[in-house]
Length: 251
Image (tube, rainbow, N blue to C red; front, side, top):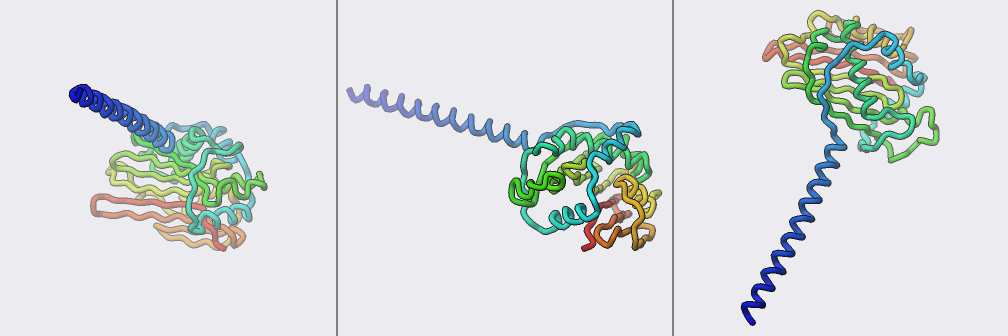
């Protein structure tokens, strides 16, 4: 009798362990699938798009300087970023990576970036869509509300790291940060003013006011509301170099 009870107790314990183990394994698999969805890793190469494709990428949606300034002020407000899925009218993850790919190729072929980047094998790519406002906030103004979200797209290998901030509605790259230890990629031969002028053309900006520049830095303002900023850093130790260009708010 006692032996029978002991065997029954052991069977109950084993059953509980099997059920708990199955539940734990299922949750781990679900967590892993969720993480993969949030941070999809791709292997891509940067290919040269057609001129028509470049124009289409940069002319998808037009925003006024006032609208751009308002968006940039919200982005730089320090509010917490909220991850969300694309709304209707915003770039999908695939489209955001395509815009990053196309933009990098355009920059390289316009001498904003070294052409050697085209030959770099950027094997890891991640993309996240963010909004710094409360979920679905300000989407009553459909024409500009969707433009407050941005895709953060990162591309890298062991020697190069690139981060691009892409407006989720226009598909334009509004901020670029590049750091590299690669001996084959350097920014010595590209002047900051030339970079700024080519980036200005990419954004479709004309005219402008105040202009400041030297070998490593350039800035130009537009209607005293937004500006284009470019700066680079070239180092000797370890051949570390960095480059930044972006739209900025001047208000």
